[in-house]
Length: 157
Picture 1 (tube, rainbow, N blue to C red):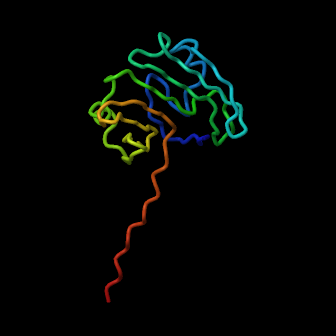
Picture 2 (picture 1 turned 90 degrees about the horizontal axis):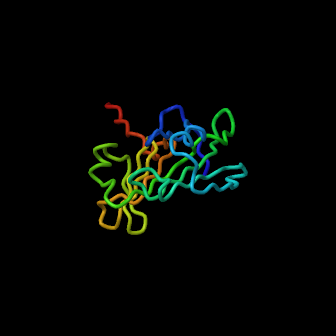
Picture 3 (picture 1 turned 180 degrees about the vertical axis):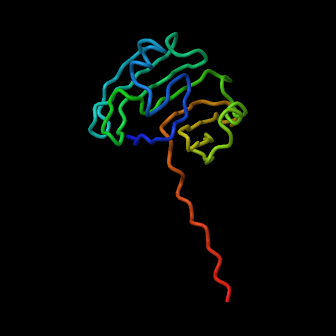
């Protein structure tokens, strides 16, 4: 899914900010990817870089970076759209996520995995025990969930 880049800064990690960081900056920071895949996403040419094994950042089993974002100025194929971290066991846990990013905007379940959603652009999936992090997906900021407008008090007569 393509996301529109928003002017608010997205969550970032490891000097990658979705909607801002480009391919050259990712390559300068992490080197060549283990694997590169070219694909069509909603009719646009997009690229995915996979870093795993020795090429993954320290403490991470796999990092997947998706490039190509639809911005107000048009499609930008070299800009990070999203990236996903799959950390090694116990590198990230619930307490660390809450200490680092604060309380989430939304908590939910997908199958037997609990997740936290942050409007700043972070989705965190926990293991079955709800303690260890199994995946962190960084995106541009997400609009708040539809909320019911506040009720106005009725005028007094």
